[in-house]
Image 1 (cartoon, one colour):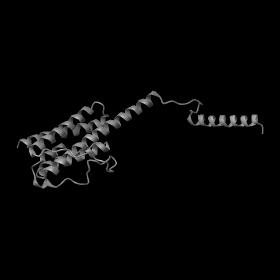
Image 2 (image 1 turned 90 degrees about the vertical axis):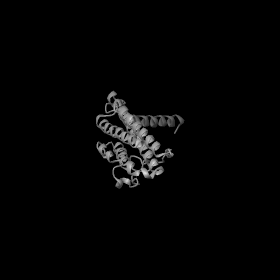
Image 3 (image 1 turned 45 degrees about the horizontal axis):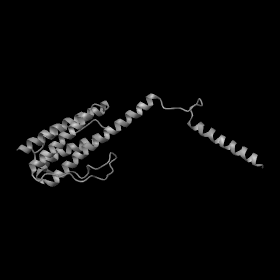
Image 4 (image 1 turned 30 degrees about the horizontal axis):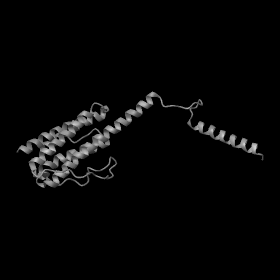
Amino acid sequence: MTTTGRRALLVAGAAAGVTALAGCTSSPGGQTRRPSAAELEAERVARAEAALRQRSVTAARGLLERYDATLAAHPALAPRLTPLRRAVAAHAKALGEGGTTVEPAAAATSAGASPTASASPSPSVSASASPSGRPTASAAPARVAADPRSALRELAAAERGASDGHTAALLTAPPEYARLLASVAAAGAAHAYLLTEGARA
């Protein structure tokens, strides 16, 4: 085969390859299909919602870590903090799953009311667990004041901060998730009140 013949064969093969590739990325009409404006907007909304959910879950887990650190530093506060910590763990789980059911905030009114609530936090609920339930690397433990009353005030401030963050997220959250955020924010405000009153006791 002459050099000219080999070149012709190579050109033909390259052209066939391009044609096959174009067929994989083209629409049935033979033209390359680009995402529509609606599809691009849907993708943008989905990404924004995923980021919002991640921020909400991170805030809830950070608050849960604060509870665990406070309980570790002040075991005597367990009767008061364990019911609240249990509610926060339920909120973190619900936010991660995108569900609509959270532990009623009314359960927090039992804080400090019953000595039977002094059980240590359940090890099955981890503040550093991923939404899939697999553990992830956790940040350094939160610093806790040596004085129990100061520790309670710090925890109340953390509750208010998380509640404010969830409330702010309502502006951009989809309806179903917004209802969940509103419930969690209201519960956080109730927790902060109880912790503040407890710190004054």
